[in-house]
Length: 296
Image 1 (tube, rainbow, N blue to C red):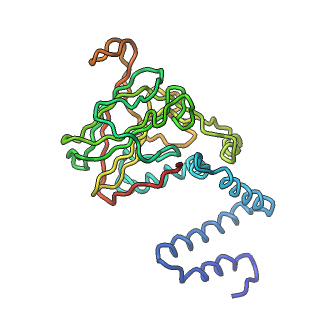
Image 2: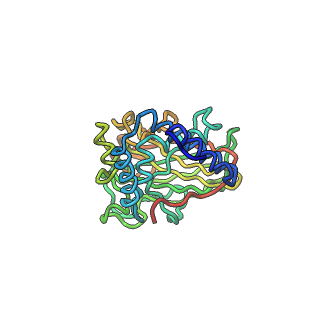
């Protein structure tokens, strides 16, 4: 079909893509074309705006390297990452879920740590945090021998690869659940932190008049054969930016109860201010797989 006017373009492209294989790719491409073209018509996208958009996408790639993923950062800043997460977890978006964003800082090969051990691997001043977790299935049965990666920022708001003062793999650890589906660890209370705004994502943040901070949180990645890999973040309940997270990651189910204590911790080696967190994760049946690390 020869194109004669703008209304013809969408039909021509969709017709050209009708033999795409596999069928799922065909479904996605045709729907993408239909909605993308409809968007351009709805806002009457100008040639100048189109050129700027192309350059913006190019800059996303140019800003991405082995230590930083600007595309992941942009997806979160548009709320798209959270939408995809909620569509695919919690009974396909029908119920609350402990699933959340992977984020840009997960690394493979965190140090294996005995349950109850510390993931503080270099001097990291801040209030001590004692965490007890349970991993269960939908029926409430404990899941044993699940592998859990834990990682988080320091009380200054830096992940270890961002901060030369921290030892490699500081505030990271890998645990295994016991017969009760339980594991525990000691760390320090994390702080919220700003996302980088020296690239295209920063342009978006400034244009929308928003701050560029994430509320404090712990990251978890839970792997067990026969269950869908659970990626989660548990947010600190006293963080003032819970409702304005620049990455739109906070859901009601993921606001943890970080309890502040003042006095002696039961083990006897902490005095003064310290925190505790008890958290239960629910895994869904499904395919077990590890995501590709956003950074190396």
